[in-house]
Each structure stands twice: as C-alpha cells, then as structure tokens.
Amino acid sequence: MMLNWAEEELKQADLGDTRRNKRLIRIVEDLAAQPASSVPQA
Image 1 (cartoon, rainbow, N blue to C red):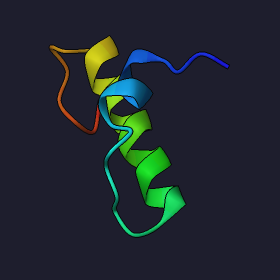
Image 2: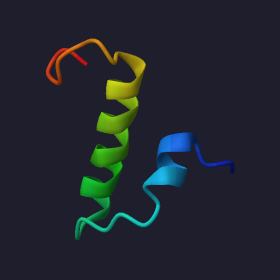
Image 3: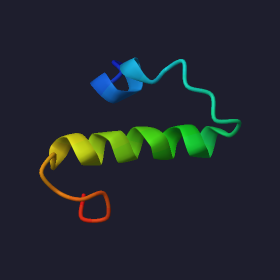
C-alpha cells in the first residue's frame, strides 16, 4: 500500500496513540484540501 503525502510527511509523528496520529493526518489532509478555509470549516 502506497502512503499518501500526509502519511509520508507525518510518519515519524508520535502523539502517544495511533488514533491521535491518524487524526493528525486527517486534519492536515483536510486543511490542505481547503487552504483558504478556517480550521473548523476545513
């Protein structure tokens, strides 16, 4: 399975819990998809 760009960039992130790591990746992907939006809107 090929990692997407966010997973590749954040693969060394260790927030102490796998769920937190996955959430970080999801947030970064969402923000990148809507860069002009606020964090809650993204």
